[in-house]
Structures are given as C-alpha cells and as structure tokens.
Length: 176
Image (cartoon, rainbow, N blue to C red; front, side, top):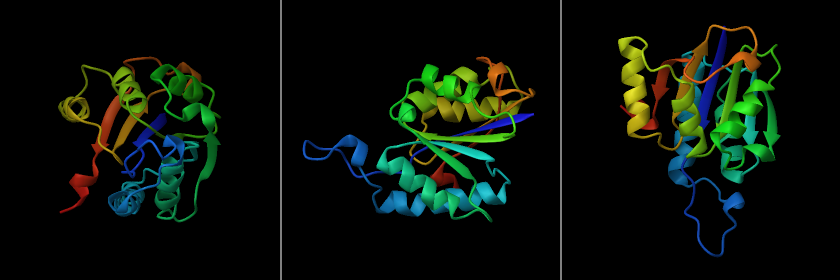
C-alpha cells in the first residue's frame, strides 16, 4: 500500500507589489497551525518516509514546523517544480518518487494541490470517504491535509480516481 499526504502550506502574509510571492513568509496563524498539524500527523501515524516540498518560503517554513513534531525528521527534497504546480506536474513528481517510500508527503500550493487531491480521490468510496471528499470540495484551507491510500506497490501506478480519501484534516478541526 502507498499513502499520499497532500498538505497545503500554512497561512502566509498577504502578497503585495513589494513582496515577491516566492518569498512570502508564514503569518502568526500559520506559525501556530503548522506545528499543530505536525503533532496531529504524528499522533495519527501519518509520518512520511519522504517529503517533497515546494521551494517557496511559506512551504519551507511549514515543513520545518511540521517536521519538528516527528521523532526524527523525515527526508525532504525541495523542488522548484512544486512551486504553484498544476495537478499534472504534482502527479508527475509523485509518479517518479522512490518506491522505497511507503508514505509520501507533498507540501505545496493551491489550486494545484486541491485539484490533485480531487482528481486522485475515488468518487464512490465508503461513507467516510464521501464525507472527506465533500469537505475537500467545500474548501482546502491553508495547512489542511488530505490523506489518500492506494492499494499499489509503485508510485508510478497511481491513476486518477483510484485513491481512498481516508482522512481530511483542517486546522480548525484541531482547535477544540
């Protein structure tokens, strides 16, 4: 089985004409939400064997705060190709991931990440999968995590509509 974790970066400062989008940092809420999500991922045993992370400052900061919550920080690769990537580009990177990794985390941006999750999730799964899918369709907020399970041995074999959306966690779900 392969498990794909799709994580949208935590909340960042707003962009403006003076700020390069790639250099936008996390705001105070993002700085709080990322370790909260990391702790929840650790608690639910959603520990990646490998993390693929966009090179944007906000994704790197998100990953650093999440990785600090694991017993040992997982291996991470920082990829320019994930910066504002379209679903097709994200899937291409997933397909090329090392098959030794059973759980793969992608830390990226919307709308590509959300669209990728929607493309990969099967539409006629269990009641809980359908509930997760409805939540995902409603909104994939910053620092949200989609968990997709695939009954496969190789990342390259993942196809649209073949993943069980076993979990969808939003920061608001974790704040009592």
